[in-house]
Image 1: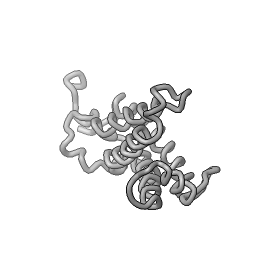
Image 2 (image 1 turned 120 degrees about the vertical axis):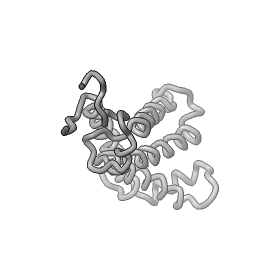
Image 3 (image 1 turned 135 degrees about the vertical axis):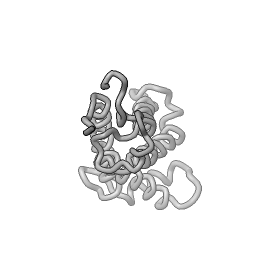
Image 4 (image 1 turned 90 degrees about the vertical axis):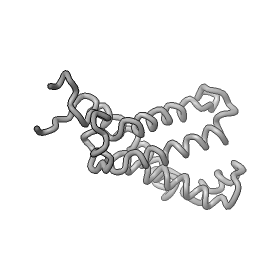
Length: 155
């Protein structure tokens, strides 16, 4: 029986497109200086002020690359869980080193936005990319996870 994408698949697609496009563009600003961004050198200097151990250019490249390539993976639905995990790691560091001390609300430069991004990443990691993904190597083991199987209501 041919699988027809259901509402969960379309919902996961909406999450993937929004998160993936946002981080592909955001990472482009940091890596390449595109879309009005300042580029990797400036971003690495910002990262250097966070006090992470080791060379700032390494952490800058890792964070910007995680955003860019994580966004790419999530957007296309190719290794979505790994892309979402890469984005989530950057958000955890952003909360830990930058936004956490400012409280919850974004109006005070708090972690409200980063927590929302973490929730979207967690949803994609747990549910998978849905049926409307280009490549999901975990689909074979998913079963009903992410709507990849048939529910009792579907027959």
